[in-house]
Length: 158
Image (cartoon, rainbow, N blue to C red; front, side, top):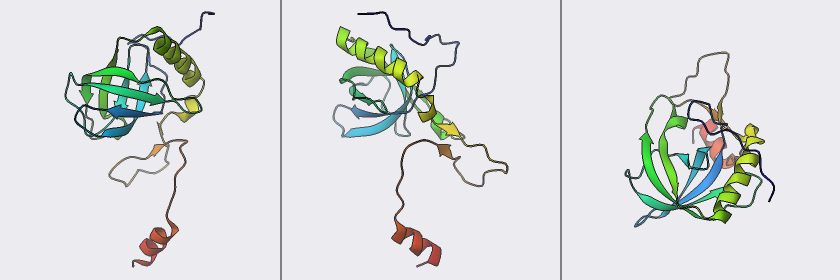
């Protein structure tokens, strides 16, 4: 196998932001679909407002954009972050537990691919005037749907 050039994973350097869907299968709980915003060979940061306890071990599956889903990996919660002023910083950090060679190869490939897809990362939209919302707007390249009936009712104040 040829060596793959990977982005540096120094704590001092800013990691390239990513946005990937992830399923988290917590023991004794339902499977939750969340989004991860940081990814490295050692672990990830997952956006969430309802966080598992520190030390919780669970099964994590990552669905990088425009790629096949990665094989399920075991992860352990090592940190929690709550920032009421910035919802995209709320969540928990995990470390991967005992990656096998295939999982490590898939993860390396995904990191290289995601580094080239920075446009999918969440970013705050620049606005010429102050935001009036309680929560700031987060721009993504994810498709969204609006129910015309609900929109029409809300405009007419049904």
